[in-house]
Length: 370
Figure 1 (tube, rainbow, N blue to C red):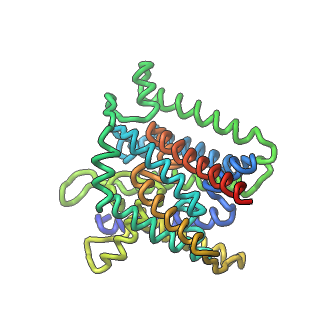
Figure 2 (figure 1 turned 90 degrees about the vertical axis):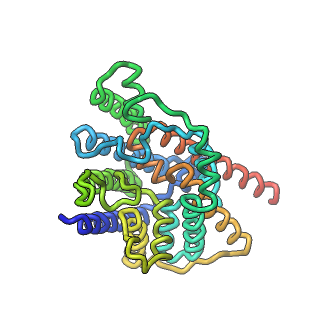
Figure 3 (figure 1 turned 60 degrees about the vertical axis):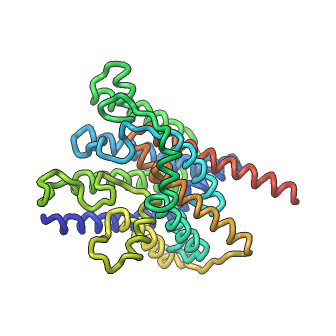
């Protein structure tokens, strides 16, 4: 298959995957911000268990692909030797704050756009623009020179994945370490998830965890195996159809920026639809299809100028924080963690902490005003 045709094929697969993701996320009310909110405000772990189930499924499937040679985990943005701990920490905290103010993460915003939520359209615009200027614009210099500068370089051949780090310390061969670490962490998560009787009976939460986790695995297979081919110009093996020119899976902050860039430079023939851009469109379309089928589509708007202000700030923080942390609650919280990257775990816990702290502050302010 020609390079241009292969890139187009990968993009179409991304669109299909995004459509399924958006459909299932809307049907199951899957929301990572909502999962944190349920735990913090009500002590309800249902949606959090769904998120954890998706992580475990993604982790098992992704590392199975790596074990059998269908995916090279060293060829991703998550697994390099550089460990920019401050960027993971600050970016994660800001993203967690932002998604709380914006009433949902990047993925949830796309799902809501498909359901007719005009507030999420505003969030999408500000999130995408902030992500774009953090990737390539004025905020990019601050990100690189300040937040990524104090990075630690890990002295291992295959980066910062936990199997690599622990295998190096314990003297295990790479495949043994991969199986052992994946098995222990995934088993612990699954035991915690299914020990709850109510969760086992909840169809939508189980559906979301299983299918969305499998979606991450499918994304890795599409870009990391199907999209791998020889570049006819350089004669080097290249990943086609991705913005990073590496293997990618589901993530929604940088792809939102690339989507806005694609719209802005529509007439530039060098700007093409990639896997990430296609998934952004797909999630919105999938959610829209579900809302039409169930007749749940309805227009929603801001209730006040203050409500709009919070959503604008939230979207901006998500755009900056998501790029800085190299992912969102899906990009790091599922896709990144599926690689067992140390940085992804730090970003994930930072996002959850930022959201939880913001929710506690909001509750305190509400109680004082009551």
